[in-house]
Length: 167
Image 1 (cartoon, rainbow, N blue to C red):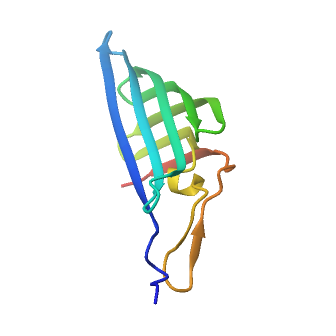
Image 2: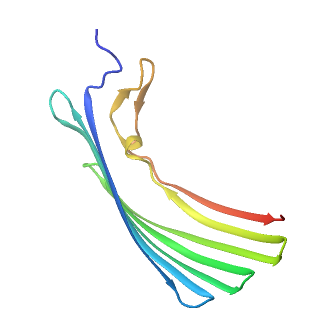
C-alpha cells in the first residue's frame, strides 16, 4: 500500500543574501545611512521517477535604502528615510517585475526628564514565499493536501506607532 504522505517529487530551495551599508556623521546634529541589500531565492520541484522538472521559481530582490537623522537639540531627534525595492521574479513560464517605494520616519521628543514622546512610521512590502507560489499539490499528512497559488500578489502594510513614556 502506498503511503499518502510520501512525496513523489523532490524539491530544492536556494537562498542567499548580501548587504552593503555606509554610515556617515556629518556633524553633532546630522548623520546619514545608505545601503544596498541583494537577495536571491530559487525553488525547483523535480519528479523523482522521471527527473522531469515540475515547477521552477526564482526571485531577485534589490533593496536600496537611505536615512537622514537630524538632532537639533539633545531632547529632539528626527529621522526620515526611504527604501526602493526592485523585485524580479518568475517561474519559467512567465515573470514580473515590481518596484516598491517604502518611506519611513521617526520622531523622538523629551520635553522634560520624566516625559518623552516617540513616533514611528514605516511601510513594508511582503511578497509570497516560494512554497506559496508552487503549483505542485502534495500531502502534508493523510487528510491534508497543500497547493500554492502562483498568482499571489504582494502585501503592502503601513505602520504608525506613537508612544508616551512616563517613568
